[in-house]
Amino acid sequence: MPRPTAPTGPDAADEPDGTGDHYFTASPASPAELRRLEVRLGGRDLTLTTAGGVFSPGRLDLGTQVLLRTVPDPPPSGHLLDLGCGWGPVALSLALASPGATVWAVDVNERALDLVGRNARELGLTNVVAARPDDVPGDVRLAALWSNPPIRVGKDVLHAMLRRWLARLEEGASAHLVVQRNLGADSLQRWLEDAGAVTSRVASAKGFRVLRVDGPGTIAPS
Image 1 (cartoon, rainbow, N blue to C red):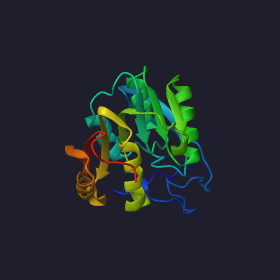
Image 2 (tube, rainbow, N blue to C red):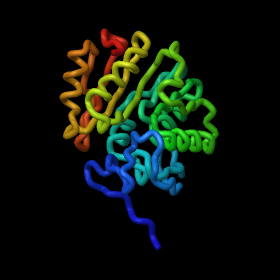
Image 3 (cartoon, rainbow, N blue to C red):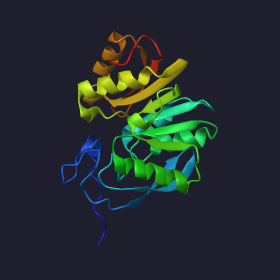
């Protein structure tokens, strides 16, 4: 019997499963149900592992596609961050493009961290570190940050998260964030600017905005 396909509406990747799990649940209660997914990352056709209880397990979501199509090449070295890594498409793209860099794949979801680590090992990528937020050493400074941030956590949590990580950007480094227009991309840009971050919209496609934040600016962790 064929496996049911994932929902395909504009917010399908954000929907909880039948257990009430969200992609930002630390320990998903839903069965893992590992599955294989064919995707194209870094100019390569890959078959990777996903599972229920993480963000967009059935497809490479549109927002991430827009982000990966529009970001500049990452720095070849230094510390690069995928904030809210899920099963790993952004972190893996960073690692494929910059084998000399350390890529931090950060998420609160334990299943997501297991998946991104599993996928990195399968691809032979030794420069990916799957980590909870508090496991990233405090002295790590970021040469780049790419993120499809977890908008559904709510504004207060999202803003605190962005303050924390944007403050770690090196001088001259930039973050690139993709946010759905209908989920507050423009209001997020205004908040970032009001918080002192130099922010610009660098792309808009498929109902998503890609925001560039030049760091470290004056934004500071709360």
